[in-house]
Image (tube, rainbow, N blue to C red; front, side, top):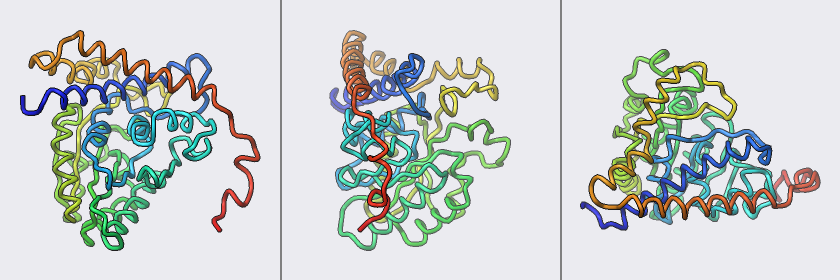
Length: 321
């Protein structure tokens, strides 16, 4: 083994947590216990968990909204779950959900539901980390391949490159912009190639292989902390719709069925067993333990207090002193 057994087991633990956490949302939506509008990352969890496992305390996160498991582990599973479903929480009072969350104590940059805005805000934090702070950390900038089409993102990449900001941009490339195939609207072989035009180096990898993703992200973050901005483009596949309720008429069900054979949790599990790193019984025990954590988090969140109009209306809640 290249790493100690604990490295591999911890990786699987985080990955199976992420999958079970995401799948709990449609389960509760189907029962009517969960309000809201959700964009899940089922099938793309390996990239998020690789980020979580490789980031350091001094690093800041500006992920795109489709990052619930990453948010949960970073901010605290119970606190984030309560916030995500619109109950009163210690994060943002239950008024941010996951789209507009901000948690400076956890090094989470302000999030915005408009495409390209998270990246612009994140670049500002990257500028601060680079020029106005003596921190050892960098800015981890998450983005989907569709958001790369936003004009603001091209400006962001140019600023990152021209000013050598301490930024690592990580692209989750699932080849679908809501319902539009990337190859139908772009001649690029990979959306990450767009960064070449700004003078940024790019690494390409398999986002469904969590161990490969960890290696590339580790390299990218080390470079960013040294003031060497870079981009990592990781190929993956979104197993569910763009949002919960999306009928996904834009793709053949057989395509998704084939993708299930290569999804990250299955691949990680098979790798660990084939290499003799873990037994099926050990992995089943991890699955069960993480399932209990997820169930507990959602059970307490559903029972939490709902914000009142007074909690969300008022100038003092909108304007700073």
